[in-house]
Image 1 (cartoon, rainbow, N blue to C red):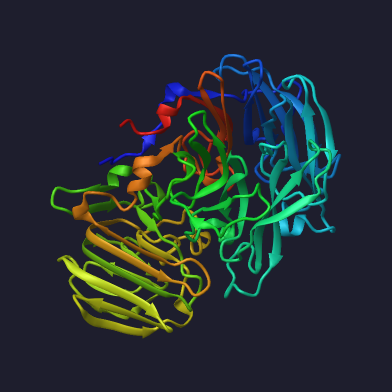
Image 2: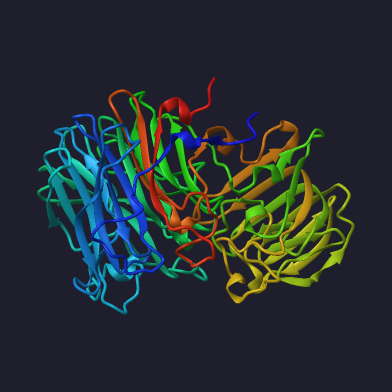
Length: 577
C-alpha cells in the first residue's frame, strides 16, 4: 500500500522563464506574472515553449513569449515577444495562449484576445464573449521550428479559452472552446457565475487551419459547466476528452469528466466521472500508447499534477482530498485512520465528495469514528447540511443550538440523512436529531475539516470555499465511511471505505497521481507537455514554487509565479511494479 503520492524530485525541475527581461518594464511594482505555458518538440530535436507574460493574473499588460531549449528542457534561450497587447495602447489583453506541432512540422499557437479598456474589469467569459466587450481567437504559425512566425490571424469572434490544437489522423484540426448560456435548472445558483454556466464545443478545420467552420457540442450540462477541455485522438476516429468543472469555479466537488467520441468528434458519448480534479487538462498520447494528462488540481490540495492511464481503462470514482501535509492523515496499527489537524489551511484535512445538486437531492453519510478533540470546524460531516461533532456535543454546524450533548470520544456509528427537507442524525441506530433543513441546505458533501465555516475571524473567510480553513484543529479516528448522494438530474454516487482494508479514502491519488508541486490555485497550472524521440517527456507549467499563499489574491509572502520545466521519463510518472 502506498501512503505517499508519486513526487518529482527537485533535480528534474528547471526554470524556463528568466528573472529579468531586457527592454521590458513591468507596470506592476511586485514584478512579472507568468502563466499559461505549453511546449512542443521540433523535427530537429529542440523544444519550443510558449507562455504568457503579464503584470498579474487578471492582466493589464500581456505578451505571448517564445523560448527555445536545445538540451531537452534543462536550459532555455532568452525569450522573445511573439505578440504584445495592453489596455492603454491596444485596449486588449491576451488571455491563455496554447501551442501545438502538426505532423508536417508546422508549429501553431492559438490564443484568445479580450477587449479591455483602462478601468474595466477582467470579466467572466459569459460577459467577455458578448459584443459589448468582445473576444476573439487568433492563430500564429511557424514553418521553421519556431524561429520566425506569422500572425496573428483572427479566426472567430468567440474566444473562450481555446485548447491546444489537435491534429486527427486524416489531417483534420480540432480545438475546444468554452461558451456560456443561462439556465433555470440551478436552484440558488452559486457564485461566481450564478445562473450562467459553461459548456464546451469542438471546433474543426479541414483545410489545414485556413477556415474553421465545423462546431459540435462536446459537453453541455449546467450541473457541471464543463470547460477548458483537452482532447486526444488515441486511435483513428477514437477521441477522448478530459474536462474541467466550471460550476462554482469547480470548488463544490465534482471531478473532471471523461467524454469519448468514436467518429472523429462528430458526436460524443455521455460524460463519465474521473478520479481526478483537473483545471485546464492537457491530454496527449505517449509513445507507449498510454495517455498522460497534466493539470492544475482543485479543489483539493493545490498545485500541478500528472496522471498516466490507458485509453480504454475503466477508472473508479474517488473523492478529492485536501491534505497538504500527508502525515496528518495516516492509517494506524489497529485498523483506524488517524486525522490530526491544526489551525489553518496548511494543516487541514478534508475529503470532498460529489455534491448534492440542491436541496432535492438525498444525501446519506454513515461513519464510525471517535472525536478526541475538535474546534468548531475540526470535525464536520457535510451531508447537504453541516453537522458538527465536538467531544461533548453533536449539532448542526450553522445552527448549533439544534443538537444534543453526547460523548463522542468513544467509538460510535453515526448516520446522517438529508431527505425531503429534513436532516436526521442517528447514533448507534437510534435517531437523536430530526430537524427541518430550511435555508441551511448546502451542496457540499464533505468529511473532516470544514471550509468556510462558522467562527470566521475575518469577513472574507465566512464564505470562502477555496482555502477558508480556520478553527479547524482536531484529533479524530475513523474506521468506516459510506457516502451516498442521489441526485435527480445529474450523477449520483455510492462510495464506501473501511480502514481494515488498509487503504486510504484517496488511495487512487496515492497510487497513481503525480505531484509535480504544491502551489496556490490561481498561481499554478495551465500546463503542456511534449515527448521527444528518445522518450524524454518535458512538462512545462506555471507555479509559485511551493507556496500555498496567493500572489493573485494578495496574500502576504506569496511568490510571483514563474515557468518551470520537468524533464522526465514515463517511469517517473508511474509506480514501479
